[in-house]
Structures are given as structure tokens and as C-alpha cells.
Image (tube, rainbow, N blue to C red; front, side):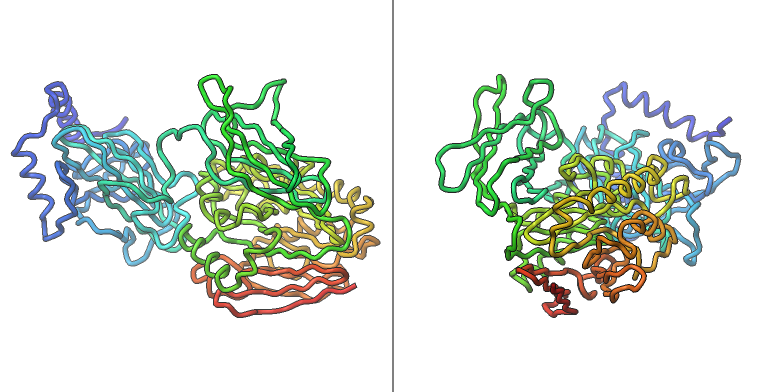
Length: 580
């Protein structure tokens, strides 16, 4: 049985009467709210007709649940957890941008806190509430959930009130606002603030978008005779695609079909073009089918891509990884800084990301496309190796909708000029059944089948003409089988098991393995046991823009591959040349 204070019983009855009476806020109530606003000089920013809280009740107890947070009220002097009998007294605190909920920095991951406050509105209104925490925070208004950090945590440090911003719909009169806060591994802080308007372009829309194309198209699966053109869509938006050799007049039409119909509702439309002419420039454009009958097709701007040759060819690409540990703004600033320091990166033929694009993928478009990838020119091909963080989050399973190779898998082979590239999926850093508080979706991962499947695939791939005839062979993967430390003692051994029968003292040797994961640049010499060197790209973490080897620039020419490890300050960390 749940025990309630007398105030808990009386107040809902009063609120119900006020609601039936139109729930209007009297001048006396507004004046009372204004007085509360100015307590101890903590006057908040003013929003017309709204009185914001400047005092909160703070309750802390390991037994608190989200149900307790939804039911809590500011007038409560104590709470009793829904599943317990412990009486938890309230502590009155003043509003601050950032609240430290720990006492003398003593806390553990099982601690829980509830913040309760009130917002008064003269009439029904819509404002915005911003929140951030180290590491979890959820908000409730009048007992209803309005938003939070989802299952993956805040994914930003230090936390600010602009980390997550949600629509706050207020009824006339009093509105009860509560926050349920859990600590992270380094601190227990929460940030809360209110905004009259929300015009930050980095905040994902909370309303259904109009049908259309969400972002510029992106290119995957570069090759001599085939490419893939991908469009991210909003709502019900069917597309046709037209393409042609540059300079020709005749367009060729392509569609994505399902059951004899053009697909008219999808997150992503991927057009796989085959039979293309090697080493040639093509033009393409999408045709948007317009409602209500989808008869009229409105052309998008014409864009270009270039196919590759299966023979000796000059080209360049750059490689990054582990961009997950900083905020979106910091990611963008860091990538743009290195692009400015090295303008040649913007002229590269393709970009490789070796995993951990984002910390926890709860909003795929916002976390991936409206972040790191919007720094990549639309004519630059994107090659992705999935990292452990791509297995985490509510929308992690959308990975193959957005990035898949021609075989429909998260791993594949590309032959570009004289080089054969193998891209591997090394899975998550924890085994099935692990208790990982950062990822409630962990138990959906079946890594054993994924890695065994790749072992069998590799045994066949190394027999193909594309691999056998290549002058150079390079592997991209999030971790490497040697030359890396693995603090979880799981990911590297599983990768070793996956590739040892193919690449260890192999008759099908590779020339280089490029990885990430450790967030620190490193280069390991040729291993006697494995027979190839490993390069680890830097990245991630606070101050990552100053860490060495954040990007790798590769220049490929007949018989030679040159690599530079680049720093964001414009200096070169390291160089490597591979010759045949």
C-alpha cells in the first residue's frame, strides 16, 4: 500500500474543482507566484503571463521510481517510495542553472532524486523546458511524461539546460513540474531552464514534418560499375531517380519498388545503380512525386558522382572515428576546424568512418546526419564501419536502413583502383547477457552469429578476383586483432577469433589494418604473428580537438599509398608510405 500525506490527498481535490471552474488563476495566486519568483534575489527570466519556479523540493532515495516522480508535488514535505515504506524528507533549494545533487561528491549509480516545482500560467500556454544531467533526467508535467534523456543518457558533458529541449504545454493556473534524476559515473548534476521560444536548429523537431527530403542525398558503395544513392525522407514522399553520363542528353530512370509499386513511405530510399561506365562522371537528380495523386514529379537540383576504375588510379580519401564523446556543436567545430586547416580533405573522393559516430543512437537523423555527416560534401562517398556505440540506443537497429553494403550487410568489400578494401563489423565491446546500464537494448544483440557469419564470408572473399588481383589490401574496422589494448577484454579477442583463420600468417596477406576505439592515435609495426601493421585514428573525449591524429589522409597512386595523420591545429602527427 502507498502512504500519502494529507496534503497529497487534499490538493488533487482542490485542483479538480479549479479545473471544473475553468482553472483560472486569480490575481492573488499570480502575486503569490511573483513573490516566490523573487525569493532571495533569484529572479528568473520572465515570460509574459507565466510565473516560473525559483524554489524546488528535492527528495533523494535509492528506492524512487519514475512513478514516484510523476506523482510528486512541490507542497509535499515528505515522500514514501511507491514500492517501499521509507519516509523521505524534502529539502528546499533555490533554482540554479546547474544543481549538484551529491553530498561531498558521495554517490553511486543506484542513487535517485526527484525535483518538484510549480509553474503558474494566466491562460493555457506553450513554452519550452530545457534539461541536462550527468547522466539521466526525465520530466513530468501534471503527472504526464514530457521528455528526457531516453535510455542512453545525456550524451553530453558538461550537462547544460540546452542538452534536451521539449515542448511544455501549460494549462491555466497551477502546473506541477517534476524531474527524475539518476547520476552518471563522474558526478550527479542536473540543469533545468525555461525558454519562451525554441529556434535552435540542432534541436530535433517535435512535430511531424512536412513530406519531403530531409537532407542532401548521400553516396555509399563506391565502385567501378555501381554506386548507391540514398535519400532521407520526411513523411509520405515517393521519389523517382534520373541519372545520365555527364554531357549526354538522355536521362535513365530508376525506382525503388516493393510489390510492383513505387515505395511511398520510408525513412530511407536507396537507389542501387549498376552497369555504370568505369572512371566516369554521372549526373543525377530526384523527382519528388507530389500529393494528392502523386502524378506530378518535381525535379530536385542536379548533382554529380564519379565511378572508379578497376585499374591503377589516383585518388584520395580521409578517415575519422570515435566522434561520439562530445556534443554535436563540438563535433561540428572540430571537423570544420581540421577541414579548414587541411582544405584538401574537402576534395577527397570518399570519407571513411571507423565507428562510434555517436554515443547512443536514439534519434538517428539528429545524432548522425544532422551532426558529423553534414560536414561531408554531397559528392563525397561515405564508407562506414560499425563501432560498438552503433549497437546502442532506441534507433540503433536503423543502422542497416542507412548504411549497408551491396550484400545487404554491415560489412563488405570495395574494389577501388588497385586497392581492395574490406570493411568489418567487430560488434559490441560486451558479450551477450552483460549488465550494461548504458544500453537497455544490449540483450537484443547476437554477436556470436554476427562474427561467425563474417568469418565464413571472409573465407570466400579472399578467393575472389577482386581481392586476389588487388595490388594493395586494406581493412577498416573499429578494433584491430593486434596492437590495441581493450579495457573490456572482450572486443579484441573476439575480433582475433573472427579473422585468425583468414589473415593470421595468411596466404592472402593484407597491407594495413586501420581501426579506432581507443580514441588515441597509434601506429604498430608489422606483427610477426599477424604480418601487417595497424594504424589507430585518434578522436573522442574532452579536448579531443587537441589530441593527435584526429584524421588520416590517404593519397593513392599507382604502386604507392601515402598516409598522413593530421591534427586539428594544422600540424602533421605522423606519416606512412606503403609501396609494392
